[in-house]
Length: 268
Image 1 (tube, rainbow, N blue to C red):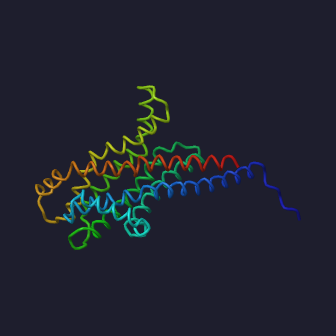
Image 2 (cartoon, rainbow, N blue to C red; image 1 turned 135 degrees about the vertical axis):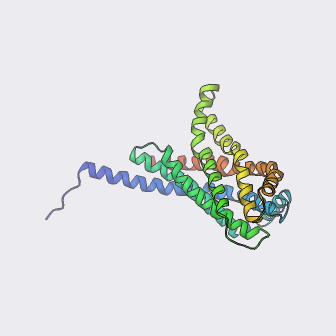
Image 3 (tube, rainbow, N blue to C red; image 1 turned 90 degrees about the horizontal axis):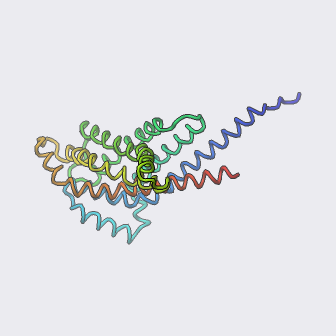
């Protein structure tokens, strides 16, 4: 008995599903490529900030010594647990943003809110896990449970960072175009670099307070605030330097890789 032929609509749907699958694979490839490029610098700065907050070694010394270790033995550096944690975190973050865009394109839906929800959930949960692991690996106190208040502070910090990295740049880029007449590509690049950097002035105190709640359990509010004030400026500058690669340069690299791979798929 001859098999019934698929209708043209069904064949078109199958082709669209196949293209979506290939686009999702390209999304993950772009995410991993961008993450691998920026993860060494982020690992160095994150570890140095954690060590500085715990009193293990000063921030500048930590950055110099860790950068020197990476320059001397890069292959050994990328095999470390801390590098694997950071690489996995940013691969997952970029991939969630990319995949949400692709799925919303397929469903013909606006991606802004779904992308914010997806990237916030992924980035927040993995960043909290990363900071907990780093504090336990590189702190000077015996590893212990993270205070719930510190987890809450990290959650707010990461929500601000994700919003400034994946949602705000589009609106800011449009504003720059309207107000200054700059071309769209330059407006997007400027917004992608500025938004994640500027939000660090707000999120850094949350980061420092969360770390100090873990490092100095039982200390009073005044003692915690003194630590935040003392470490604020240099930590904010370090986090801005770190966020540039993480969500500025990394975000641009991720977008470029994704666009290049998608263009190749669409040309097939």
